[in-house]
Amino acid sequence: MNWLALLGLDGWVARWRAAVIEGAIAAEDRLDLVRLEWAEQKRRLGLMVMLVVAVGGLTVVTLVLASLAVLVQFWDSPQRTMVGWLVAGTWLVLWAGALMGLISVAKQAGNAFVLTRQELAQDWRDIKERL
Image 1 (cartoon, rainbow, N blue to C red):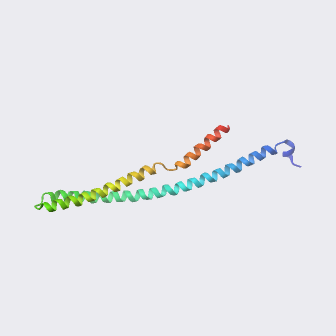
Image 2: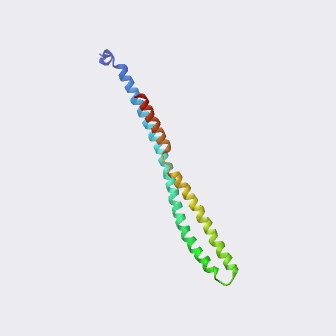
Image 3: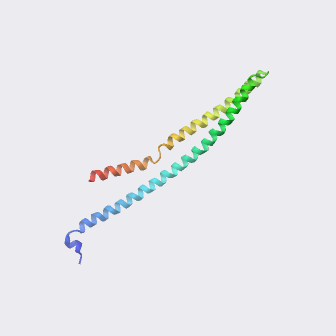
């Protein structure tokens, strides 16, 4: 004997069962999205660490060569001066490029989990509308 059918609760139980299944599927989708975004975030963080090391190393080289260029400035030959400043300028351009790359990656890292946050916000709006 089916007591739920006799009491008229079988429709209510079916709706709850469907809602739970739908919620489980939605939760699984959200977890997949989080995994994908976490992989992207790890890639960005790895690139950021690599660029921090590059900027640090190039900063040291730039300062050493800039100091060398200043010293060469006071030597006898004008060719040494030009070469010293060209070398220092080259290192400065490389350092600026690495710094711009670092800033670009840092800005992108600030937007972590955007899709997950948007999806959860939409879910929350849907839940509030149903209530």
